[in-house]
Image (cartoon, rainbow, N blue to C red):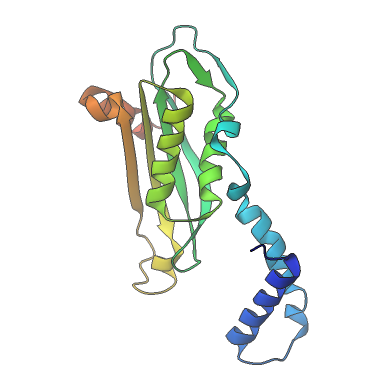
Length: 193
């Protein structure tokens, strides 16, 4: 079943009426259903992308066999349990075999997963799976740190809590030295030298 834009806007209108507990239709909410549905197009654009398309452009690694790390990739997502926002930063690493990928592609693969109704664990696992499948690296690692609206705005109301998830594959899982080096790179202060 495909839902039309009009049907989605009508659903938002019903939700707004439920929230305000009236059918007042006040001026400030007049165009809100259309604005909400339009914003969903961007917030949930990850459904329109395929990992192979995002990671399709690779380059010869020219013998490079060290860690490639893009750290502090900011992201925003929406919790599938309460439709509350969560945001944070992702650290994405891999050790290439023959091919490397453009660094913007690492940020884009984070967005592909974040821009869906999600949970943090699935984002973490999905990024690592995509790196493994599309780059065939010696190892892939994803660490995500995020604060969750469902923890801050409702329920336990813990403003400063940060959830951390990780997925370690290949040498990052098998070799403690690789994990240690990765963690040192993540902790090092950017641009301070």
